[in-house]
Image 1 (cartoon, rainbow, N blue to C red):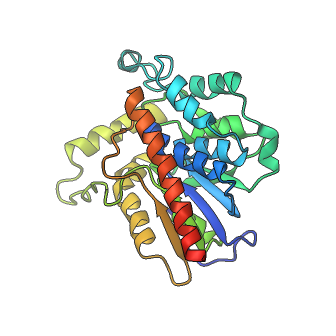
Image 2 (image 1 turned 90 degrees about the vertical axis):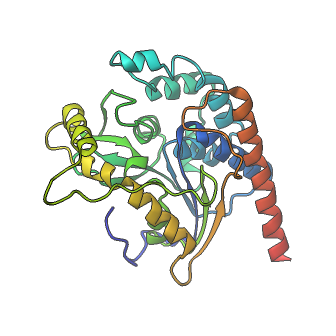
Length: 305
């Protein structure tokens, strides 16, 4: 990720909503955002989402409550989306193209509202250098951008190309774009996480200069080159993903002076994983999100009183 600088923001914004991804763990954020919509709570100047966080935000900024919940519960649990046998045979483990387009056919996203609400950005990762890009979502690009931000390497094998540039899942390069929100001018930031507070990723040790890469690092490097090409810079970004994620958590815990960050996270007993297909666990995760939104809004009211 490029260094954050206190440069002049592109527009005068002070408040931002940041939503982490996490595939099926996004059921928690769908509950949080539905709770916000039920309370008509949308004080933000802009929003940034990653992967499932971006698709959740697409329903929030277009004011379509329960759309994301229904997609996760009713469509993402189908074999057309998640199919281990298909993945083992060289196909998509998770077919995000099918999921997005089928969902849009069944529960149409009100794309015209994307120009009427707050600016909404989705994170994608550029294959050539592994860098994150933050694309403003519009009625003209929403379908392609939503597929790109969810295109997890190796799980979704179809190339996703925007303006002649190939991208994959935004979580590879910037899983929690809170630092980007600050760079864009936000000084009051609400972050919706998809893991309980206290979680941190394991960090890959740097390559041993004497012995070179470890076996696992060499295997990953070969897999990336085989799928994305010899010049793909994505491998290095994948190596640094754990440290990048933890740096975002450190930023949240210790924001710069003048920046206030509020966090909404699942409770410790949140039992939804990246590929959880159990409807009871998913419903529980959604209800936890709704409850978290209620408590968050009540706390805001108490502080304002």
